[in-house]
Amino acid sequence: QLQLVESGGGLVQPGGSLRLSCAASGFTLDYYVIGWFRQAPGKEREGVACISSSGDSTNYADSAKGRFTISRDNAKNTVYLQMNSLKPEDTAVYYCAASPRNPVIRPIIQAMCAPLGFGFWGQGTQVTVAS
Image 1: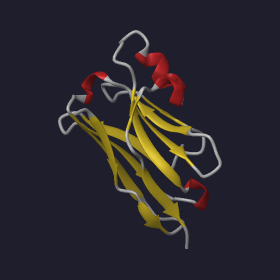
Image 2: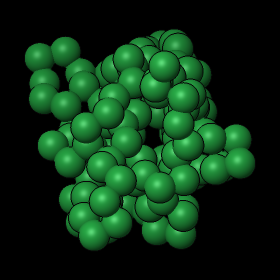
Image 3: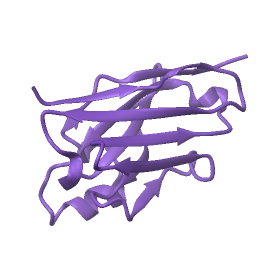
Image 4: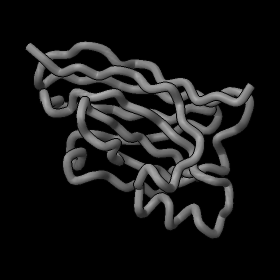
């Protein structure tokens, strides 16, 4: 069964940190751009960070720059999102997603880091930032 499974969410105080993990099962992540997205209640899903299939290129939303770091360990078939200096406005369900495998469009999808470019999604993990 092909799956992306997010973990690592939870309740954290403002200024705290969390590390989210996105583990793949049933397929290897090596050939896919992976993105982290989030959706807060009443808001549209938005891109947070994206990483190339090799891990040598990353993109961040302005809200994530300087605070979040996306990384991947292809040997472990896992992508991470390290989130530091968390704010209440970071509260959302966080999803990871995989791009199409096509090597021609992968760089475009990574650069845009928009939900429309990603076709395979995990179930999400809740992140709540509150004191």
